[in-house]
Length: 132
Image 1 (tube, rainbow, N blue to C red):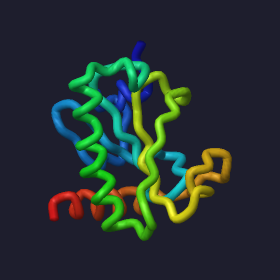
Image 2 (cartoon, one colour; image 1 turned 180 degrees about the vertical axis):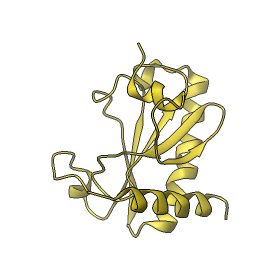
Image 3 (tube, rainbow, N blue to C red; image 1 turned 135 degrees about the horizontal axis):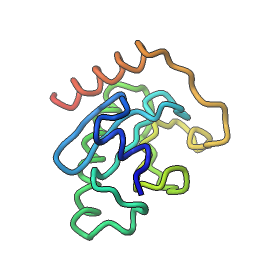
Image 4 (cartoon, rainbow, N blue to C red; image 1 turned 120 degrees about the vertical axis):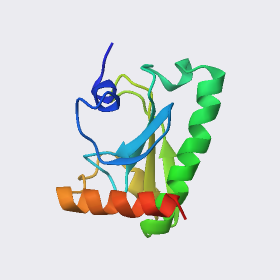
């Protein structure tokens, strides 16, 4: 079943893209729990992370690691937290969230509000950091 993420992969819905290769895509969560909150997805439409093949699952982590390292260079934080919830959108995805405390991973706290320009500038900075 096509999800909003499938539409993003197909270019039918815009996103603030961080990174992309032939199999995976990373883009900002538009309702971030922290500035720099990024989603990493397989381009292949798969509902649940653990339904990915072993090759797909082992490929998404190095891709996510590269993205996380770039976020760390740009967004002041102690670490990049990683969570897989899998209930919000029926498409496998990983949340990469800049954190300084465990509270920073709380999805029930108020979401960050960023302007289009702020999202675009931060995405450009992270893309630049990926190439350094």
